[in-house]
Image (cartoon, rainbow, N blue to C red):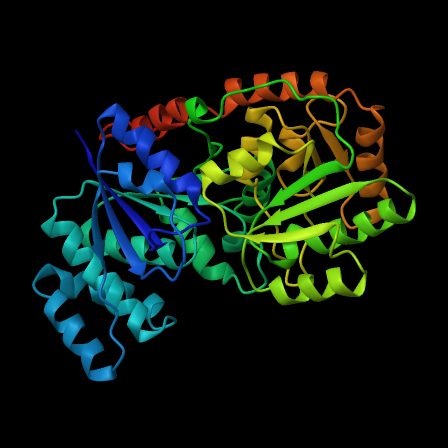
Length: 402
């Protein structure tokens, strides 16, 4: 049995249910997992599924003072490590000192724990730390890329390329991301493979959608950040209300845009039509989906270049039987296929979103047909048991080919 070390920026993290689902499925296969967390969580709530994870958790100490940084480095470097450290020093000089110290500490713990393979989620901080630890220990690593770690304007292209080229495998969560990385890393030896995030399907039982209610019940779930496009959903609600369409919108999540959305709802006189519910556990989200007529994912590209990868809650909605209306951003068109598994719209056009919701409210859209096809797609391509088996095979000794 291979001992796998998961390198994560924060653990546990409320918004990263896909990581917990992945680890649970791998543990069910018998994989031996450890978690190495680089930052403490600041979340106010936690999903109960975290209690099912058996992996050992190590928090990698982060020095705050210069003297602490040098002391931590000195404790982690001896013998052959000094030579390897010297070889990667030019790259390390481009990083903050506390990151370098954490990378060395991660290497020390990986060696002490007998870890045989590292797996990082996000090719940013976690990816950099996995690269340092692997460079010092020769323990191979894989990295799952998502969205902000490859699309955001703050991404360092040199480090992204270094992490991807030296990884045993780079995992893309959508074909959109896979094609982006293939273009970005063209001519390199990077091994890029597609593997979607997935769901524990037993926790998302399907039921056919009922005829839409009056008012139409719309829900949206996600971090309250610009790329989620929730401001467009609020504008679309105003259009529906003006057109005499009864509608009630629930938006679940927390984030930096909370105050801006709250003010937008107030200024558009929608306080009786739009609610901000705060963060919800997956069980609470399932309850929200069950009582909603439609799930909206009006994602957009943020001004800083940030995009959504493939929101897990969209997959959850499709699994449960809640019809999905989404925008053609990043990986969303791969699952929300217009007129087949959902309704797909151009991003950033509230009028089009309002039109799609109006068609659902009037019964013009056959939501039952869309929902059944959506569930079939999820069962075929997004089962966490299949995902875990593939990842386990990729990370086993002697199984490093495509």
